[in-house]
Image (tube, rainbow, N blue to C red; front, side, top):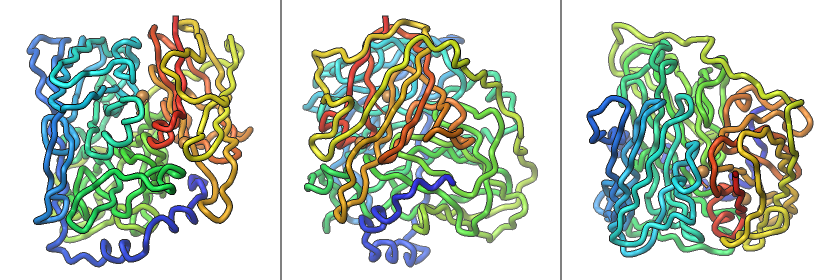
Length: 467
Ligand code: C2O
Ligand code: CU
Ligand code: CU
C-alpha cells in the first residue's frame, strides 16, 4: 500500500470549497502548462558546462489581473532546468540580485561540502557565488533551491526552485520519451495560499509552524489549473514535490495504471506498474503514462487523491512512440555485512521544538563525523507525539545531503518496490522506523534534515562532516 495514511489531516487542511472551484473551472479558465526552459550552457567545450543563475525579485499573475510579489531564478517564478551529462565539469555563476542573503543548494547532487550550497555557503546581496564540480553519479532528476538558515521555507515558497537533470549513456540509450516539453515533461508541483488580491504572503500561523505551511490551491510549474496537450504516445512525467510541507498521492482520473521508472536518485532497476505514487516534500518520481490507445479529443486528469492537479488533453495521433522498457539499469545493492557503523536518528518534538536526536540546528556544532567511502547504516525513527484532535500525527521526510542512499527496511519489512532505487529523501511517519544504507564519497560538511521546510527552519537539522 503506497498511501501513507494521513488523509484525514490532509482533508482537514484543504477546504472543500477550493476543491470544487478547481474542478468546476470552465475550460477557458484553464492555463496552458508552462514548461521551464533548459538553461543555456555557455561553455561549448565537450565535457564542460557553465551556467548563469540570477536570483531575482519577480512579479507574477498567478490569478489573471492580480500581480503577486515573487522570487525566481532568471525569471519571475521558479527557475530554468539545468541539464548536464555524467562526467561533465560544471561551473555555475550564482548572482544574487536580491537585497537579502540566499544560498543555492543542489538537492541530490553528490558534490564536495563547500559546493553543496547549504547554510554555510551564503551568497551576499550583489555578489556572485561560483561553485564548480564534476558530475559523478547516474542520470537523475534532481533540483536546486535556497538553503539559508531559518529562511529556506520563505524563499522556496516565494518561487526559488528549479530542476537539475543529469543524463548519461544509459538514459540516452533507453527507449524512453526524450523530447523536452513534448513527451518528456517537467512537473514541479506546489501548493499556495492566495490572498484576495492574488498575493502569496508567507505568514506563518501556529498551525503552519506545527504542520508546515500548506496551501489550498495546487500549482504545476507555477500555473493554477494547468492543462497539457500531448500526442497519443508514451509520455514521461518528471514529478517533483516542490511544496514546503504537503505530501501528494498522485493518480489518474480513470485509475489507469502507469509505470514508475525513476526515484530521487535515478532510474529504478525495473519499471514498476502502479496506480498511485506518493511523494513527500522534495521527493521525485519519473513516470511513464501510456496514451497509445487514446484518440485525439480524449482527456485524462492527473490528481492528488481526488483533487484535480492537471488536465492532459490528447490532441493528436502520434506517428510513433517510445515503449515502456521493463529493465532499466543495474542497481547493485549494498551488502549489509559491509556496514562499518550504525547510527540512529530520532526525529521528535512538535512545532518550534522539532529536533533530531534531541538537538536543534547549531551552525557551530558538528553532530556526526563520518569516514569517506565507508558503508553506514542509518536507523531513522519518528517519535513525534500525535497532536490528538488538532492535526493527527507529524510526518517527517528526512533528507540527507551529498549522497544517494538505499532504503533497506521500512518498519521491519521490505520497503515498497519504488523505494528500492536510489533515494535522498525518505518519508518517516509517526511511529515508523526506516533503515537505510549509505556510502559518502565526497568530503566536507553536509546537512541532514526534515524536508518540511518549516520544520527545517525551526531547527530540525543536523550537520555531519565527511573526512
Ligand atoms: Cu532540498 Cu537540504 O535540501
Ligand atoms: Cu539536499
Ligand atoms: Cu518534519
